[in-house]
Length: 275
Image (cartoon, rainbow, N blue to C red; front, side):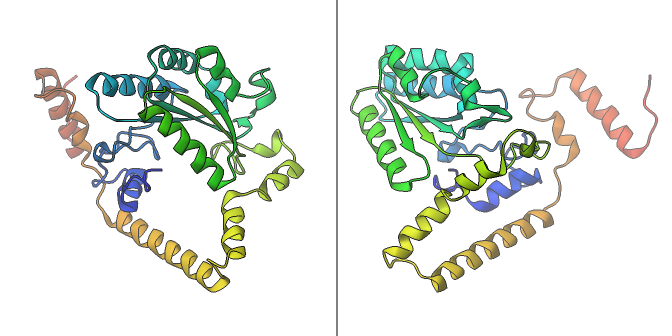
C-alpha cells in the first residue's frame, strides 16, 4: 500500500532494517512504517487502534471542509476489538468519510473466523451503525477496486462511511513464531493457493494477451533485482547512532536526560559510572 502511495522501496527497506536512514530512527517494529508526506499513518501493534484514528482524522477533515477520505485496514480479528465498534459508531453518527477495509483472511493467528463471531458476514455489522457493508472477493483485483472506488465516491459526496469485507486467506504463518500446521489442514491451504490473487490476475492478463511468459519473466527478474539493490543499499547504510535514543523526547533535553546521556556515553567508553 505504501508503494502505491508513492513511497520508495528504499525508504521501506530502511525502516525494516532500522538503519540510520530510517525516518523513524529505528524506533518502530519492522513493517510499522509511516510517511507523513504520503499520508500513510504509522501502524501500531495493539489490535484495532487505527480504526478510531482513521475516523478521527476523517472527522477533522470534514470540519475543515477538506475533501479527504481515510481508509483503515484491519483483519477479521480486529472486528472483536473495542476500537472497531467505537469507530464504526462515531463514523455512522457523524457520517465520517471513512472506508473500513477488513481483510478477512479467515484466521486471527490461530483463531478461526467461525470462533470470531456468529454473524453470517463481517460486513453486515455495519447495519447496526447505519451505513452499508459490502462483501467482496478479495482475490479478485477488479472487484476490490470497484468496491473501494464506490466507497470513496460515497465518502466524498457526503454519504458517509462504508465497511468492505474482502474475503482472502493468509497463506503463510502469522509470524515467525507461528506454526499454522498446528491448527489448519494442508488441504485448506491448497484450496486457497489456487485462488492466489497474483496467480489469478496473471492468468487473466495472459488470457487477454496483455502478458506472455517472456514479459512475465522479465517483470519478476526486474523486481528481484530492484529488491536486491535496495537491500544491499540498506545493509551498507550505517546503523543508527545509539545516542539518538535521547533525542525527540522533549524539545530540549531535561537535566535528568542530560545526566543519563553522559552516563550512557561513559558506558560506551567503558568508563565507570557513579552508583
